[in-house]
Amino acid sequence: MNISESLKIIDEGWVKKPKGFRVHFQKMVNSEWVTDYAPGEEEDPLDSDVVAWRLAWKLSQAGKPNPSETSEGDIVNIYVVDDSGNPIKWYSTNEFTILNVYET
Amino acid sequence: MDEQFERLTKIGDLLNLYGKELILALAILVFGLILARLVIRLVGVTLQRFTAKQTVISTVSNALHLLLIIIIVATALEAAGMHTIIIRRILASITLAAIGLIVLFRPYIPTLPFKVGNTIKTGDLFGKVESTTFLNTRLKTFEGLTVFVPNSKILNDYLINYHFTPTRRIKIDVGIRYDQDILKAKQVLEAIMIEDPRVKTKPRPVVYVLNLADSCVELGGRCWVDNLKYWVTKCDLFEKTKLRFDQKGIIIAFPQRDVHLYHETPGFPEEESLKKISMQPDPPVVEQV
Image (cartoon, rainbow over all chains, first blue to last red; front, side):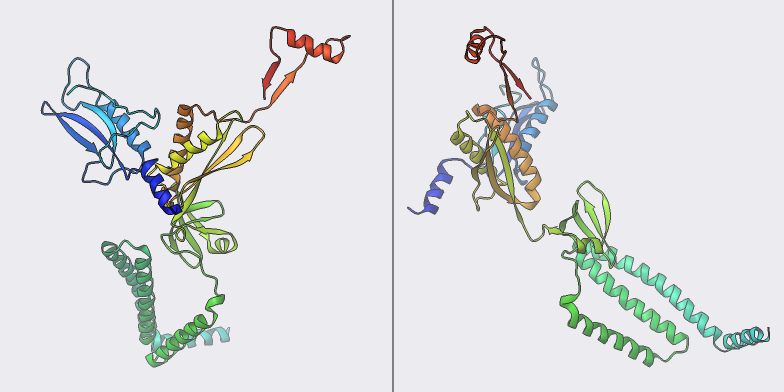
């Protein structure tokens, strides 16, 4: 096995390099929970997970639901996904994190 | 007195003869130059709709401006009574001489090592070139300042043109304490760089042990990114490095000096003195400077 082959194995098996990041969330629209992404799926993803998590945190603060009752515009179940739609760990805790967790 | 009177009479005669032509020529020159300026402005605005390249716009505008000036001057001189054939010959001679000189001495003519739109660093200025003239260069720095830099200063100073280098290397230097696991720290730092989508895969990110310094083991992470993403990526990588090291229990070192104070008791030999101190309940005082 030459070096390039071994490097290929390392790239596929060790640390994954996502192509971009999106913030996944659910928003209350017309009394229904609608799943959406920021930036949208038709737009280019963000190239930084730091920026994506910052956006997620700001969304969680802006759309924090009232624990007793939800209302229009509430944003719940916020987390960052990669280009394939898989959740990624929050770099500050290195754990899978969901902001504004809510059973929908 | 007579001489002055005679001179004035001569001027009067000349004005009688050519006055109308001279005034007409002057009017053509003044109005022509104003009109040319307006036309150039209009052309600039129109070109901006078709192309975003400032280089193309400024080149076309400058060439057109020069052409208009030549036409206006030629028309004015013709109105003043000069034969156009002479004007044409003079202009042709000047043009040929200029072209000849440029072709001959081009390698020796100092030129600015950048174009409009390039990002450059000269002296302590770092920004984007907005325009250049014979005398100065207009630079828009990343703090939003517009700086007019004399070309002579640019030619006499070092200059970095980032246009020629599309990628740039990021240095993530971090020092860890001597009691920390070097291999684990290297692995964590390398993983942080590899997993970032902006970091290039070729050349691959690498981590070196740079130095065994006074207070720490210096690790150096090196990776390559696009020029445009250099600064933000570097900031993100530093942030992630600190947080990930904290998560993994790798302690980042800081400059420190330990000062050990031993209380010497008079009358005791040196060994006895140290023994006595070690028996004391309090550990030796350690001061961090």
